Amino acid sequence: MWGRTATSSASKAIGEVDVYLVDTDVVSELRKGEKANSGVRGFFATASKKGIPLYLSVVTIGELRTGVERLRHRGDTPQAKRLERWLRQITTTYADAILPIDVDIAHVWGRLRVPNHENPLDKQIAATALIHDLAVVTRNTGHFAPTGVRIHNPFEA
Image (tube, rainbow, N blue to C red; front, top):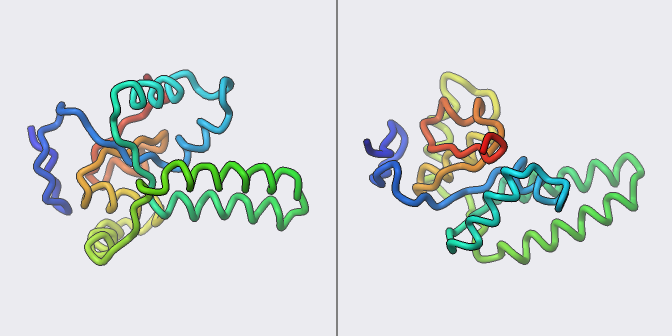
């Protein structure tokens, strides 16, 4: 079985080692350290041990920045500063693995939004994964399943 979808020219056989695009909910879970979900911790440990490449979308960086700014806006400056330090650490750690949205991704994203326009940011992440032939690592499988992208839910591992 091949990973090809109506919106992607992916040709990787499913079952081969995937390369992953980590969704915002999963990278945010990892921030909890030892209190993070054991499946999420295991996923990152295995990826590190096996040298499996992990990527983030610029959309994830934007979502994390939104979280910082919401905290700041509501007056929780200490928590906003902690989250901002963590965000800087993430952007430094993944500096060479943060994928932008380009014209090809924009075209796929536009296709994914019709006829179901909900979850536009998740569809930008899905479009990025489809173009780059990546599996999305997420807890929000319902947001991604209709797009045809390969999905891995470490919360169920």
